[in-house]
Length: 270
Image (tube, rainbow, N blue to C red):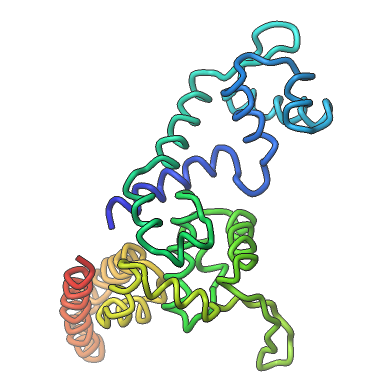
């Protein structure tokens, strides 16, 4: 679990600097300069198959982010920060454990996902399994701390790979909304990934996530701590009020129950 979330934290950090979904040209420029060395605008435009204007606009943004520096005239090179960024991405892509996890799962290998996509896929599959095979886009975006646009990019990617399916669903009030559901092919993949098998069989984790309206164990704990820490002072302050005394007893049982639930959920994940 720790390795997984450290990798995902790296993904989130990279995405916060240069958005994977909306800044493809910026990534292309970084990759081009990294492979070719200091390059002119014309060389970059030709190498990335983009107009000079688009390249200049993208380079300006990269300079603002301190990822690219001007060498002379219209020649640009990676800054130290830019090199560090690409080194992190390279380490992520070449992560041996990730590659082994992907290759061990023949179904996952067949859909041709790279290590970066792998972790987004795991999080999406996990969220769908917890949420009755439906992807709660807003909640995933909020809990993972990534933009909705970036999340949508990966969802669409996996829709094209037949892991999820886009459908239109009518609400109780007759309003049509777009939903993404896990396909049978997606379930086939999910049920062969060790971490998802553990989650599927972890009844304690499912109860914990359901009761806290969370998608991740860490998020559930944060919400529990927030609830308990905010409610405790109020109960203590009004402890002499009869109804609050009863609420305090219920609160104590909730504390014991959720603590044990968290421990059992964590133990079952190991």
